[in-house]
Structure formats: C-alpha cells, structure tokens
Length: 160
Image (tube, rainbow, N blue to C red; front, side):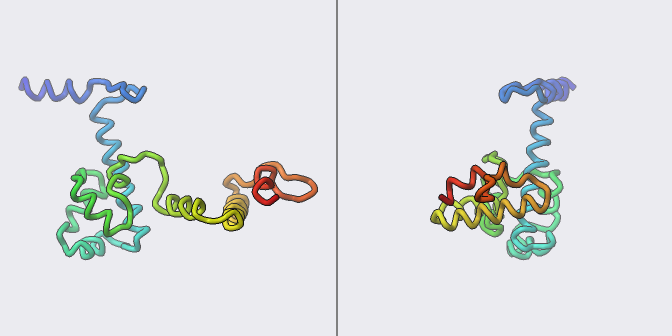
C-alpha cells in the first residue's frame, strides 16, 4: 500500500518548470496525446491511409495493434521505434517524440525550407500564393495595401 500512495503523491506533485502548474501525470498524458496525433498526421501525410498499410511498410516489425496503441496514445514510442517510423514516414524522430516544439508540421517545414532556398523572385511567388490562399479562405490574408501599386505594404519591399 505504501508504494502506491507514494506513486500517487509523485504523480500529483505540481511541476512548475515551464511556468505552468500541471501534474507530471497530466504532462505525460499530454505528451502521449500529442505524439499520437503527430504519428497519425505523419502516417496520413505519407500516404498510408490505414495503420495496416503502415504495419506492412515496416515489414510487420511493428504490429497493427502496437501501431494502433501509439496512435491512440495508450502506449508511448521508444526512441528506436520513433526512429524507424520516422524514416518510413519522412519526418524526424524528434518531431514524432515531441522533442522539437516549433509547432510546424512536416509540410510546413518543407514549405519554409523551400521558401528560404528560393531566390527573391521565387520568394515573391510563394508569398503571393500564400497571401491569396489565406485571403480566399478567410484565414488572415494581406495587410494594408498601397493605393498606387495595390500591393501590401509589407510585400512591397520584396517587389521593389
């Protein structure tokens, strides 16, 4: 009995390292939930519509049941498992394990990388496409426009 009481006290002890008061148990659950969400997103983005397809891609090294547990957040991935799955899914193991918290998906990282590699003209094209898409879907869009050129003021410096 004493051991289980000790465990309960440990799990409910607040952890304020990151400025928030949250139990270690809740932090662990949030981490597993986020890791599960990332695995599912990476699987779908990589073209594996089902867990069965991903299991087949691993050569059934990881069973459907085990992968399902990872995606449901009921089981945490070990680093070597994350590394194996990351290679298949085209993401980093650190992203799957939530060790890099920049909040970018693999597609967003690829877009940012391509934007940075492009010359000024290419960056201009990428910027205009993103601006147009965001505006058409009502998710942000352009800033104030210059009345003469019709360009946004923050975009004008790239063009001129």
